[in-house]
Length: 347
Image (cartoon, helix red, strand yellow):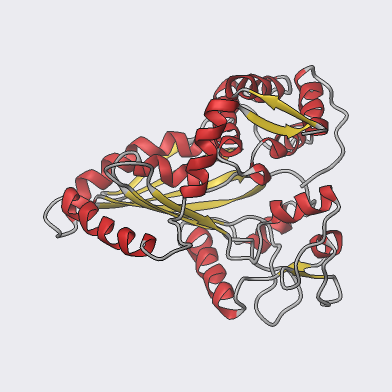
């Protein structure tokens, strides 16, 4: 494809890691971010993959984040953990909190993890898929900056407030979905703006509250929840879980702390992990077998697929053939890896 660069996954890993560490981000923080970025790019989600690297670095250059932050784990209750990311990036906080969350879920049957004071900029599905790899059913919810108007409103109040769910399977990849409570993720609208493409009606409104297909006007105005009040209700739920419940910020409070629209936003994440062997079906195997019966019924209808199947296919292709990214993005990250600090603002 003209105007693109093909990289092996190892080459992408080295490039991203070099760009992050060249700008003072600690080894532990950079390794966790790199793993998340490359996994996301590998699985066909460019809006949260290498496209995000300049934003991570811009937050470092502007002094927004603590580049060598060490997350602190607080054991609050037999089934509850809280990780203070210490003003660092969320991938490392998640990495630090994962093992104790798994241990608590296996011991108690169900456990929850709250992450606060974290700069989040990534897809959610890798976080729940890692728990599914441990044989656990998992949920995750995260907030960010105020980008989405509540149903009937025209001013941003909620974040895009994504949620993710993972269901392990005995064979093959888990069933995983990761979706925004907004009609589109902000990253997707940003890619439309970068590529000069219109967005569908119903995705955003301009600053005057008028429907728009112009991604620039939509980013300057307000995004809309999917399904009107239904998506708005889910956004409200995510805000309460990630804000009030665990002592984090609401999205509008995050925007008050950092009004600029660039880089990862400070926010909170709430996760739940469930051990299927402890939920009354008799064994984890019985749970998986019953779940498979439902999947068979779904796939029996022509034209259907299970959540995560498209990502699994993209993963197989990327592992065999590498990934392809725009040449301009590749060159930009390569310049950052050489220590270049000439970055324009980007969300």
